[in-house]
Image (cartoon, rainbow, N blue to C red; front, side):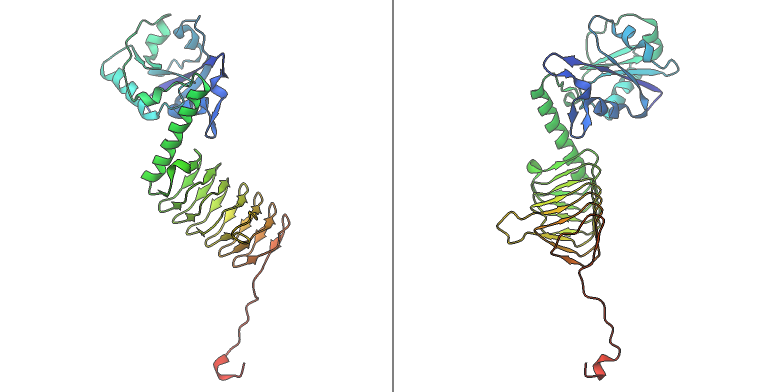
Length: 306
C-alpha cells in the first residue's frame, strides 16, 4: 500500500457487546478488518458518538504518513482491494476526505488540522464489503459471505469441491491446486492439504498436514487431531460399513504413506505409524507401530526349490 495509517474504531451494540472480539471463521472481527489494512494498521480505539471522529483518532495517527484510513470493527467483510480503491479515488479527485458507506479516508495533514468533518455524501464501492454486523443475525450473514469468499478463492486456485454448501474451510487453511474435496467436510486451523490429495466425505480435519497425492478413500467416522501428518495413500476404514465404529487420531500423530487404519481404534497423541502398515489395534501415545512383514531377500530363487 501507499504511505498509509490505518485505524479501527471498536464498535459496541447493546444486544451483542464489543464487535471487535466476536469471532467469525477463526478470526475476530477486528482481525478481519485489520487484514484489509495489512502492515498499515496503526491502532484501535473505542468508538464514541459524543467525541468528534478527528479528535477520537488523532492520538493514533502517524504524522509522517500521507493518508489515514478509518474503518469500523463491525464491517469484517472490508477487503484490501476496497481500501486501496478508496485511497486511489481520494488521490485522483484531490480530496481532503472521502466518506465510504462505513469508513473514511483522509489526507493525514488535513485530519490533524480539523476537529470535525462535514462530508455527508459517501462514495460507493463494493457494498458487500460494508455489510454491518449490528446483531447476531447479521453476524450469521457475514459469516456465510466470508465462507463463500474462502471457498471461491480455493476454487479459483484449482481446488475441486463436490458440494460447497456443506463444506467449511477455515481462513488459515492452505489447499494446493488439484485437490479434490468431497461433501460435508470441516477443514480448519492451520491445515495444509498438498497437491492432488483427495479427501472423502464428512470429515473434520484440524491443524493437520495431508501429503501430496494422499488418497483418503474413506475417512468417515474418524477424528483427526491437531498437527497430524497423513501420508500418501492412507485409508481410514469403517469396521463394518454400517455401525459407527470410529477411528480417533490424536494430536501430533504421524501416519506414514500407504497405511490402512481399520476401525475401531485410537492412535494416541504423538504416536508414529510406519509406512505400509495395516493397523487393527490401538496405538498408545508416543508409541511406534509397525504392522507389515519383514522384507526377505532370497537370491537366485528361480533356480532353487524354495
